[in-house]
Image 1 (cartoon, rainbow, N blue to C red):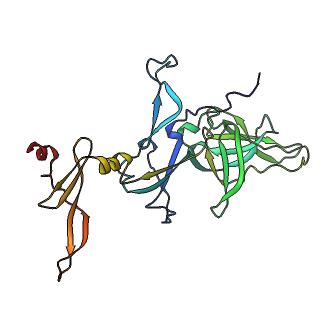
Image 2: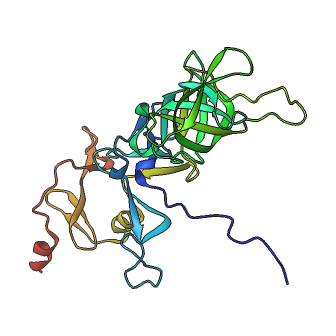
Image 3: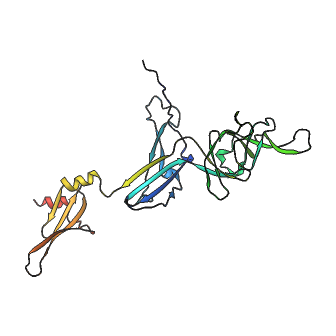
Length: 301
């Protein structure tokens, strides 16, 4: 009997409000386009999926089917033929480090301090940022590459000034306070290793901009190719019903419901002198002749 690890992947039940969507458009695979656009309202493109009402696991009001979301493509945005590359990622919040200090009761616990007034409401409660990823922005506005820290705990604090050793010097420390206006974030890694006990890992500098993002799911890239014809429409053209108006030279194609899908003009190009036919032409019509109704035509038979 084989023994293995089961259940290492957990379906995400992330809130749509914690998701950001970007997209890129190019008319074909030969045209380069580096412009990136952001969807202002994520709910315009994503919606939750729910368990069936008769499912035995459907308990409570919101019976979310974890890991499955419905992706919508609103016509106001995705309205051109071509290739759309859609990037779905955890939402990112930019803020500034207010201080780098320690807790008064636990001076060995070092962390960064944020002003809660610079954060969204959902991030202001105790441990709301637990598990979040932190990335750092350089002074020139570029991101510090390949340097990531993770939030172990996040709690509201207030300032507590304590004496340091036997000197009169004071340093600003913090104590837990549920009504405090600042947030103390303990990060990992933040403590020195046994190999180099004097080398403290970088956790940021006062006044430095950081990027906070959740770790509820992995980023996802979806490529959508909007084309003029599908297998169904091509099938209608090849084997579907057609009529040819011999007098007016109009060839009409219909779908399975006998609705006009397209029309072409049929004509010949002849030599001006010998009147010999040189070309047979099928030219797509821009104006549909609605008189070529299939039911009316066959009703005369």
